[in-house]
Image (cartoon, rainbow, N blue to C red; front, side):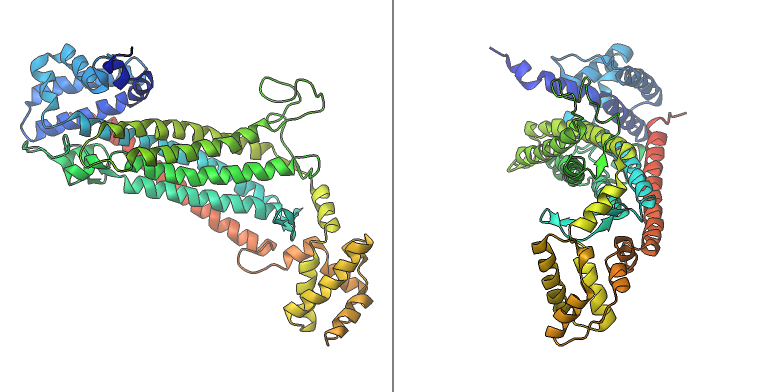
Length: 484
């Protein structure tokens, strides 16, 4: 039978706790500096404790933290400290603190760093998408609704759509970080302490902008910031799955709109390709990306269920959110980086996509709009006129380019309107590239609108990247500052 200690301190929990160890050391250093500042700890004792904590932190960073499974991460840290500075100083370090606020603080510090890393990876993906958009403004692409040909668009608009989604995801991640930007240190077990702790000082030393003031709230909400981060991550995972699904379709033989780079789809290899079908170039990377989205969503639901209906105060259940958020961040960082590589190597077949647009009657809407504008016909009436002409073409197996100006005139005359369009005007009306250039409303596919959009989004991305770098720099300065 498994003993109680092994049941509580599982191998998986030990794995996760070891990843938090260096952050626990940092938070403990902040606590020691505060104890010295308020006069609870002598300056010379604090200096010894800080030196020892620095040594242990370096061991943690190199993967050599002195972890004793029988004690757990926090007591292992205390034991390592006592071994270096003696019991009188080592045990004094825990004054006014509980393992509850200790581990909650360490976890928030870890997640903050990991989310900033994820955001940095996402900036790279958005940058790739913006670059692909800028190079593809005139590249026609079929558009779909209900998985049926709808209206032509451009590769720039497709790339731009996902750039917009990912910029929104960067905003959500930033919002989650800002909501979590508060220090629980000093909340003790859940109800505070009579020691005169300077909680604002430890918050400043840990680069938090504020304090989780009410102790019971600080501890009772353990894991909620993880849930908040996972919710933002789930939107990003959702968008990656949509993007992967689009590309899985676009790279099929039937579509052939795009081709994965050699690094993402080899004929035969360790991870991709068929072992029996020599022609295969399997898009394994896209299928794994699609599956990864479901995994992130499962982490969100797991975290939500873990926290549901817990009573106030500390509950050990709260520790179980470490796995979903920490593993989820690992997985999503990998997925974002892989999608950036996919987009860098992706090759679009411009001629194939243009031919598909010409063959699938999706220029009918642009034709209807053009005629309605040119001849002052109500749009719903011109919709019926063009619809009847297109139906006849489809039934006879002829393309839209075979549309007869006289037939259009006769159909419009049935509705009481004169549409005397020439063959040359008709050809221009159904030219896909010309149609894209006519879409000049805000966000439209026209070159002038895309150039304006590109400029604004590059500025948006630069602002986010600047914020990320500023936060990283501030955190690094706080983390590696050593007292004189």
